[in-house]
Length: 549
Ligand code: NAP
Image 1 (cartoon, helix red, strand yellow):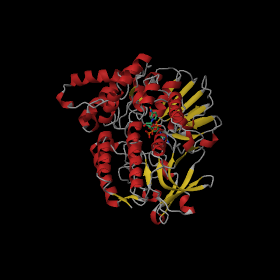
Image 2 (cartoon, protein in one colour):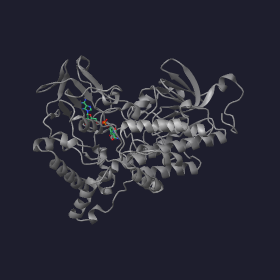
Image 3 (cartoon, protein in one colour):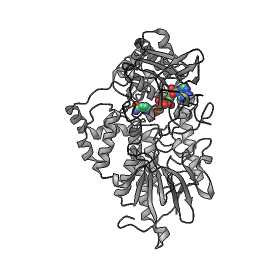
Image 4 (cartoon, protein in one colour):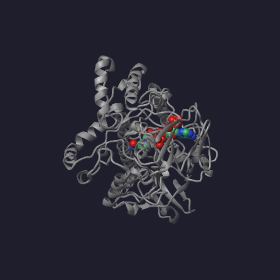
């Protein structure tokens, strides 16, 4: 327990072994959370399953992997010194630089001493009499902690397709999340990429000109617009540094948490004016074309149809073969009603003679063979298969731990039809389990680091408040949870994304119960400012809806 604090526990050897907090996961959110808690003097430890820190940026090493948030809006904002020191070299920085940044932060603030690696948590069991969680690691080791902060990452459980014969393939194959650390031979090889989400689109654009042959196995196309990346010079970085307050203020006031702020009054402009605005946004870096577009495109069917038709025309203008271009244009959902991938040289890749789009909505994959992929109408010989097939998003990390709460209730059972939480940070029946970027928060739906800083600060303040008031048990009420779920559903139903089949709506055909017709409401789409306002009002009002005992 930190200096000057009230003891949680009396003199009792069993209770003395209870630490204040365990943080699970050393990604972007866990790194910041452990800093906040240890700065406050809590006896907190971070447990990480991998052999080093970095989370998503430690794992995803595939070619083309980079931010789609402006680098300088992705970095942490808590330290002026850090903001002054770090130079982002690209507007949308690549994975190696992102991982270097996270290591730099951990070393600068001496955070590694609070982290344990190769420590995969397999069970969390609530102990009502001791008011603590028993944490079991995969190794069998156990420990006790008053609070658990789960910073498991919204996209940390990769999902492979369930095709017959995957293990029979004699060449190399892996999910993009498991792209090897060692260099992968690409030159001259026959490569198949399955999946055309944000990840597939990055890989395809990056490797098309290196590999011998590239077969892209596409089930559904995704709307995608140019990233328009570029270097950041020393002078530009100085300018960015002088505007950090302004930049973070813009992020805080924008629903997506980006510096792009939505436009209003779609219908007050003429079609020509809108087109001129889109021409400009399409050429500009980043998410401006989505989150700096008219707010109506997310809600109003006709507005969305018009912008979708515009983006479709841009795709037609970039792909030489009109048949291929049509296949690359989504027909089942509108632009930005799923999280739109941003691309570099993606559409141009299909103009190369060595790249072929294989439409598996017409001729589905039947099985993986020893030598490649068999579809309903052809066999594709391959040396390497890359599965860019997405994640068991947002709740996947929770489902991989056996979490047992009050009266022996399993969290996986409670959430089998979809998560239910209070503001994405607590769930009834699981006291003292705090979720950072948890289900039904804005962690998954907005510029991630901006959202998690709000969440981690809020959790740190709640635990500090608990310590000052000798509170040992924190639990949300069922009624508060139901109220928040109503808000999540209400916002979700107002947006066109309600019809999408993306991870935003909990859709994943590779996970039992997450497929067709099973909407799970995993994220809150009320926007970053609305969420930040609600969660800070909650703290200011003394945490109504949360019992502190
Ligand atoms: P994703 O968006 O879920 O895309 C998965 C792709 O795999 C989809 O095209 C999907 O097709 C396809 N697929 C899945 N199962 C399949 C199967 N059994 N057979 C054939 N195709 C299959 O996953 P992701 O691309 O990894 O992206 C997930 C999220 O990660 C993004 O939305 C984004 O938030 C984040 N991300 C960010 C960046 C960045 O720029 N910072 C980069 C990559 C990822 P269907 O559409 O038909 O299901």
